[in-house]
Length: 335
Image 1: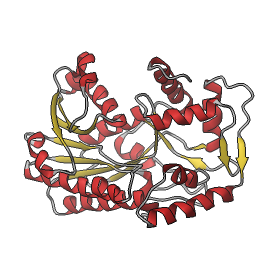
Image 2 (image 1 turned 60 degrees about the vertical axis):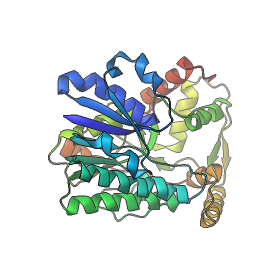
Image 3 (image 1 turned 90 degrees about the vertical axis):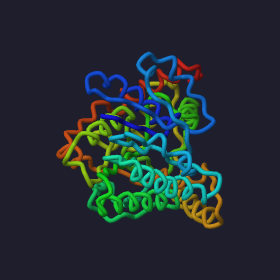
């Protein structure tokens, strides 16, 4: 099976390549990646299993740079996505137009299966923590990021419906795991100080997706005939409360005198309204956007993936966060 992965370098892309390389002899995989133009992939040469991976350079927003990478590919994993832009229009340039560009390149070159990594933001939020989001629920995109990802999902589904190739859509949630970016490390630093802000009572539920669990799900859908044309939620076995997430990290970091600052949930609602106003002007402020989400229930059911794919998330919050912290310390982070 000849596999192509975009989103390299990147949090998910890097880790997925590593795990695919560990399976390539057993599974008889041939691997190549579409790396972002102008980026440094020298890290790959330090990993023995990645030595024979083909590297192509391109940009999903530039169609003329894509075709060569798609030649003789069986399965393409579309991992590229922009979460925190400088301006709102960038979300649509990357998440929507970029997806359309790789769909068209895949079609031109006869790719057999297109696996699209989407987002929980397509489904929005839930008031009732007991109401876990399911694939059958109507989309309720959250802000422009959610809208851009939902529009991208629709373009993927259109290609499936027109019989151009097989497609599968995966909706992961809040990532965590090794290779994490600066924004996740900053989250750890906030908790390390001992007094992180919690909006509301902290009982709101969040599904989280340990990176290796997601990677294993992507391998499953590459091989499953039942997955064709389907959408799947991919997350840990159970959602966690915000308090549990924070307390687990604080315990692993051995924080003394852990005393979170609880602020009224209304504060998060005000930030959400401010976020909507800022985005309506075509602008984006990451801190405002994140604060507006932090008292919300964003939790999903993974029963469909378990039933149809045999998906079994083996890593849960405590072990996943322990591995994340260990990775940070091995790479010089002072946490």
